[in-house]
Image (tube, rainbow, N blue to C red):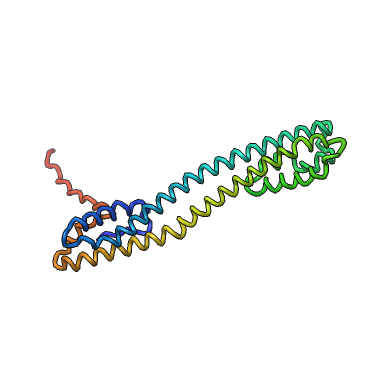
Length: 228
């Protein structure tokens, strides 16, 4: 009997077990012996559907994180512009450098899942101290609540994406390999059960299973032409 290799896709197991369980159930002498394979087939279908749903959710959550990151970038840029006007466009002003010591892009181009939230969080901490500053207080009071809201959305989006990634990794790295091992065990056990029913007819037993690999066609050697 042809068995899947280690690199056989999980989806490729399903047509084989679907065929075998139906073929076994259709034979009055073997009907019922497909129960174990049928159960693991059903479980594999359910797990692959769950995996595919999580993959789609992962993309949706990734899009929401990108949108939230773009929004916080817009707010940081808005604050930077307001702050720059307050210090008369002097980027060397200590009050400007307090928030943007390495420039605007050091914040907006930072990693949106770790670095930028930390940088914006530090910025909000400084804003809490500068709300009454006579020079930059207006800019701080205007943008602090906006940045607080946009940062919260980034953090929430990142948490949702992380949760989805962990669930997907659990399926890919733990649940799916274990279930495929069970599938292979049941597939092989079914062959053994059928051989007990047809001990003298292994070719008949082989017909209960679909091969995973197509047989290579052997090309006939070409006869040399005798035409001049």
